[in-house]
Amino acid sequence: MGTLLHVPSDRDRNRALDIFDRVTDKAGIGSHALTLAVTGIGGTAIALFPFVQDDEGMAANGSDLYAFCDLLAIALSGAHPSGLVLRTMGQPQTVRGWRFTDGDPLPLTRAEAFDAYTIHPDADGPLIPLPGTEYADAPVIHI
View (cartoon, rainbow, N blue to C red):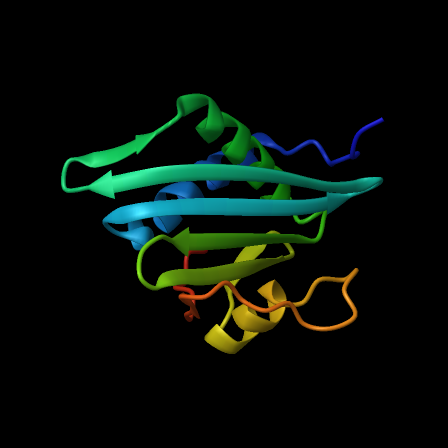
């Protein structure tokens, strides 16, 4: 049996597309990966969306987009604890994050992102960030 999650409304699905557009627009030019985690009954569902943006648009796998936006709609429903991470590849790799509160993605500060992504609940202490990783304040993306 998998993770049990709330079924999102049509409004949640429409908001998911808007939020997706906002976060990918804020990502800018370069290679990126979005990771979304939604905790439900019996576990956590995770969706990964790698993409590249240049002056001409975005290159990505369409099936990844649908799976990601489906899970994003569930996060936006406000029924489950959820978090979103944007990694921008390069030297350095930059990490930004959002937590969902009542279905609204709230940006994490640099320090909050560091704390959120360098502490694992199963570890005895903090995890060491990958070399060349910087944490940054996330932009506002909610509607």
